[in-house]
Length: 467
Image 1 (tube, rainbow, N blue to C red):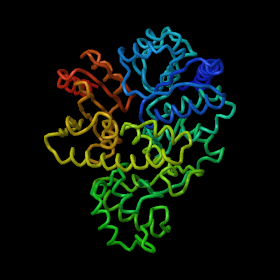
Image 2 (spheres, rainbow, N blue to C red; image 1 turned 90 degrees about the vertical axis):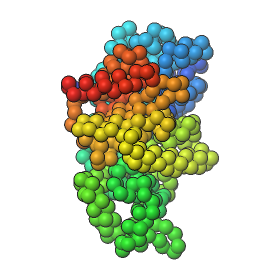
Image 3 (cartoon, rainbow, N blue to C red; image 1 turned 180 degrees about the vertical axis):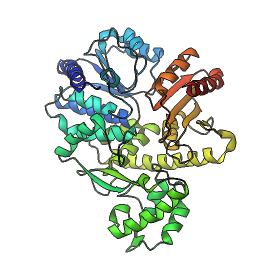
Image 4 (cartoon, helix red, strand yellow; image 1 turned 60 degrees about the vertical axis):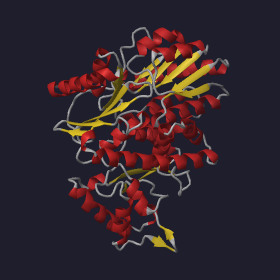
């Protein structure tokens, strides 16, 4: 059973440590992963330290190995804060940084022996399932409550972080667990409202046919990734697509038009063996944002942050989180569309090349070498997890890294019933083969020498079949 009070107490201790260092003008380096949850986590901590006049350096890195750790230590900071970066190897990272380090993670970790409560906050240590109940941003928000006098102004970021990590697994795609509790702070402070609506991308921004074409979760078989077909199908309906020569967006449709659209989309989802429930759910609206912006719908906001990270410009996403609604937002919106189009292109390519995809009863194994950039791997496997023909399987995506290793991104499909713990399995296999791995129960990754790629897959298959 989750011990929320103990979690809050540990978060308070870490918050006190960071606050003390910030007020003493110590040199602080905060490191985060360049994805939606990582960017939102960093923004939450930035806001808290800014509010007390503290200074710090922030940096995004994808991978923390010993060489990188030694390089960081040589820079001579007084405090190193690792957000989601040392998961699975806190103990060895602590050996490098000692009492100068703080670790925050909702992924599975090593036993934290030797690391005191004021230095390590991990969801699993308190009985929480970090894959669905709390995001990294949620943990940082708890820490911020003991740094800033007004932590609630960042409550909306906890929703962004959770949605970015696909933790909306409750009824009607709702947030559950501690995510739901923290979300109430955003609602009570008039930052957020929840509506029941169609789960389409760009509901307030993109023309209806483009919205459907760019929607990847839910994945609408036959329409997602097919812009011309989406337009043709809508044009044949009685829905008014233009008004005064301007394309209409989803949020402008009347209730009657929404019902027609739902009926139309349902014919596609049912043909793919899906149900109407995949199309409708909780939409989380950030009511202080422009209603014709990608920032209005929290899922779109999370996608925007993910895009800036995957496209190599996470600092742009961070600037948007910190309030830049000018140059940074304009660039982020361009990156978002480029990212969505790149994602769809890669998905269409993978699913059209039989030699790149091996599907069995339990697995969908994709060879992304030369097709999927390592920075896009997580996004691709997330999307494959909701594709009807893959969603009951364990999805494995292999990509090449820039230094010649191989990287595996592994995720359970959305309806996969397997009770395997992917984070533990991948860590064990990767270490055995001279690599590194980890994650949570439902999604994990590994990085290892290219010569071990085939053996890795065979061992993974064996482990899953055994369990």
